[in-house]
Length: 252
Image (cartoon, rainbow, N blue to C red; front, top):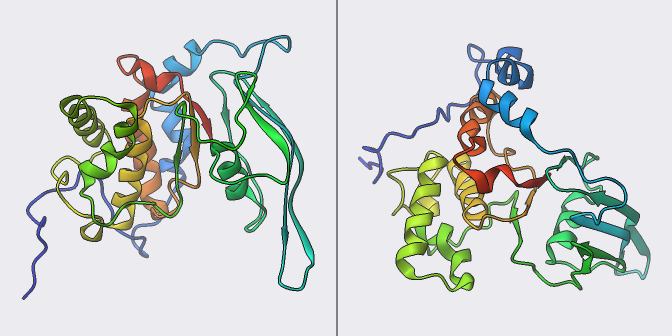
C-alpha cells in the first residue's frame, strides 16, 4: 500500500472538489467577502487616488499589435492596436473569450514575448521586450521547475537580485507560510495538488515585491467551492504590516 510522503502534514486550505452536497454559493462570493472583511474595506478606503491625467502612468501600452503567420502564409491578428494606461494602486482585469489573446498580452507586458508593433512603457520608459525586475507574473500553467522543491522554486527569482542565501531563504519561508504551504517547503511539484502548485507560483511572484503583478487566471486550477475561502484568506496579504503587498498593481 502506497502512502504519501507528506500525508502527515495538514494543508491549511480545503482542496475538496465540488460535489452535489458541496456547491459553490453566493455566501462565499465577492459580496460576502467584502461585507465581512473589515481589513479589506479599510485598506481599499485608504488607497490613494490614481494620479491625474497629467501624471506619468506607471504602465502604458501603446498600439500593441500581435500577428502570426500560419503554415499557409495566412496572417492571423491576435491583438490589434491595444492601448492601455495604468496608474499606481490600480487593479485591472482583462476580460475576453478563450483564445482572444489575454495571455499573449500579459506575456508581452512581462517581456516574455515580442509584439509585432507598438511598445510597452514602465514609468515612461520603453521596456523594449526585456523582463523588468519591477514586474512579476503568476502563470496559468504553474511554470514550476519539477527538479526543485517548493522553497527552491519560490526563491529562484531572488537569485538574480544578488541577495545573500540566508536572506533569500528567510523571505521565501515567510511567503510560503503566508500562502498556506507551511510544512511543504521540501516537497516537489509532483507531490502537490493543482491548487497547491498554483500557490507556489503565487508565492514565487509575491516574494519579489514587484510594483506590477501580472496574473494569468491565478485561481483557474481551484474548484469553485474553494475560491471564496481562498479570497478570504488573502486578506493577510493586504494588511498594513505587509506594506509592500499593498502597493501592488494587479493585472489579470
